[in-house]
Length: 244
Image (cartoon, rainbow, N blue to C red):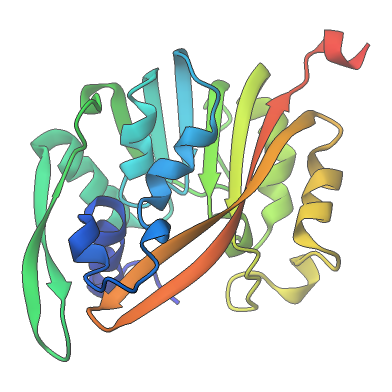
């Protein structure tokens, strides 16, 4: 599955920036699944911080949400198409895209940088979460939503996280735990429950603060949707005093 297609770009722009009515026009639909890129950021503790990192930022909504409380935000995604859209939003403030209805029919929609965001404090970079630059530095907040189970070698990222999150800083991980061979070779998928595996992987450096199930919705057409439940966990990077 490629994340470079125009169809997926439109679907993710809609997921990140669409109105409630655009995303779910049916009264009987799961409207509590709308706004996932906003809700995951809300798992961070309140207050301001200096630096935030959004790994697997897609088309940038969570990065813009992070900019409301962080002075500097870096969004990284492997998809050149997604990063180009996020950068266009950062510089232009809005972009148009087709919202598919049924068959070959579509309507024009507009993605707009959310109110209260500071796009001037954001930068978007194409990159590989498993092979991040050595000089990336460390961050007060690291956000990685629905990324871990899409990496060929997820342990490469997990082993780097203690370097990326400042001592006392926070990490939000979200995963629907949908391990697929097309993304992650079976040998690199956890044999046990994903959350138990994460606790073992992170437990030496991070303290688990909370966990919660968050639904999310991807609209493919006006009559076809993906409804999924992601496990969202908040972690605090333990400092030396915590370990003593």
